[in-house]
Image (cartoon, rainbow, N blue to C red; front, side, top):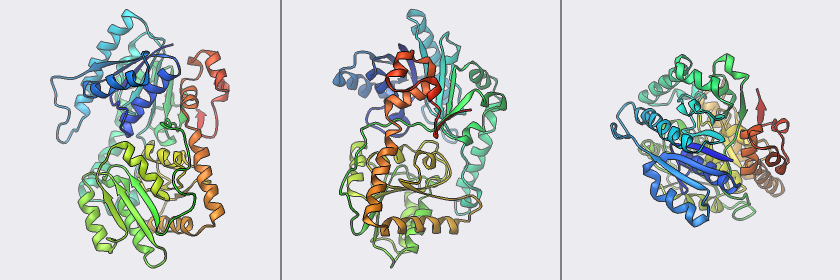
Length: 423
């Protein structure tokens, strides 16, 4: 089939949004489809080189840019540029579609439900998603945020209400052949009349084959890893306070890999809590090096307050690493009780949530060796749910030709499961 992907962010060697865009492009092409990808000129060097290295002549990239605006503007961020990019992407897509029509058109990134794509206007089935962003940070956990961060969270709450007043966004939903959202919270942000048309599919796509990386047992000290941006809503202050409460009970080492505006505050908190010997900061490194850290750590600690997808969590379980996360957002539904400990936040104070994180760490440190091995194997099993062929079949449903669905042991009626529910 001829497929057109809209992937504003797309890079073969990055994670997060860029990794999502690339994984969809690569795996659709690897499945034998003829794939054209609309993305930014910024990614040209890597996206021109990689398909040649992989021998994928059926994967092509079309580059779209915006000349009238800078990429980033103070206060309003990247969003004015992104909306203008969508207009230009539509013009490019229309030209391509007229020259040789596409069978399916799919919006992949940005994977936020709030922003429309105009590609639904083309005469082909249009897929929107998986998209997220409807999650909210628990009100009680905003108490220790800086004033500016609390203000941003309130603005974000309001922003999640605004799309339903956007006629273009509402028309896009109405014209979509399939709408996939990552969480129930995002589903609730859609207009009531469109919720029955959408389905919840907690789907990130696995980049590599899952395996149990590193030693089978636990080391001393027990090594926890966080990988991602250092920003206020990732919940790292909660993690540090949980670690501080365990001083003298267990020997721990917490590695924080990433960079961001919250780093000075985190370092200050490490000093205040006396955790200098237990916490190590690693600056931003290439994705391959970050993934290699899983082999030298025992578990993954990801106390994010409202991630929609949690790509970092998927990467952790694909390396056979048990996860500790909060029950708010996508990470909690990527994992299950066999491979993770999910800390409750509903009607909990910050102190109670920190205690919950500490209890989860203590449990992982002290559980029997046999149970620990079972958790690692359960993580790998859970990761396999996100193998590319299964994700593509769940998201595309009956838009794929029947024999392609059958080759993966799925039919449209078989796409509904615990983590992919037609609504």
